[in-house]
Image (cartoon, rainbow, N blue to C red; front, side, top):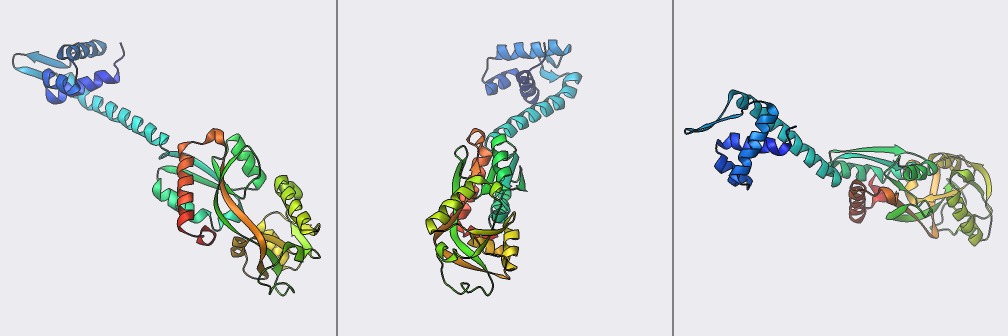
Amino acid sequence: MTPELRHLRYFVAVAERLSFTVAARELRIAQQSLSQQIVALERALGTRLFDRDTRGTRLTEVGRVFLPEARAVLARADAAVETARRAERGEVGRLHLAFLVSTANYMMPPVVRAFRERYPDVDLVTEAVGIADLVGGLRDGRYDAAFTRPPLVDDLKTVTLVGERVCAVLPTGHPLAGRAELRLADLAGEPWVLTPRGSWEPWHRKYDEDFRAAGFAPRVVQRADGVPSLLGLVAAGVGVTRLARSAHSLRRTGVVFVPLAGERAETVMAWHPGRYRRAVRNLLDVAVGLAAAIDLTEAG
């Protein structure tokens, strides 16, 4: 017979009290059953662990050597159980978080800092990716969660964390740069710089709808990956674009942000519903709590 953890617990209880009667009472089992379990353990080990006579119960030399080892095994087993329980609560383990570069400058620093302070034993790994890789990674399990603009797909779950105004981004000195607010239709005659259509088709379908509603199709003179590249092209006078207001922190010279009437952008936390574990919920709670307490579009 291979000794079980319960046999070790019974042995340690008797060894620490040197009384089968007291140990049985504290273990809440019959003394006869306890004695039988100790005999079974001794048979499994092939040696006596206790001497019992009229003077009481004493550990044999083997029992004295075995006691610290049994305690260590029990402590390790208890630690393993507690680790499993903490993992179930999302307090230990690994969490892989993807994010768009356009959200990193304001959303990532405060949320990641707060999460690591609250859950120091969770290995939070962050990775900046494009929207197509972000969605694909959530779908195939490479990423547990993501901070992103709404991906506009049906198979991912999202919760809105912050909303902000969308702005026309114009070169410094542009005739419309001094306006307090613009309508998208005001930019009908401008050259535009946008991201490639293949970067994420659902977004570009939405852009097409917005432009149609404004009464024009944009004259796209250049396409570039990523917000920093778009800002550089605007600053160089190549064209205009539109971005969330928070993007102004990525470039403060050469461009002017003018709010567009009625347009808003959201940043969401996204995840795949089939992999919604407790650690993801903990991250969501931290992010939602921070979003309610501070302006995350300015916090980075």
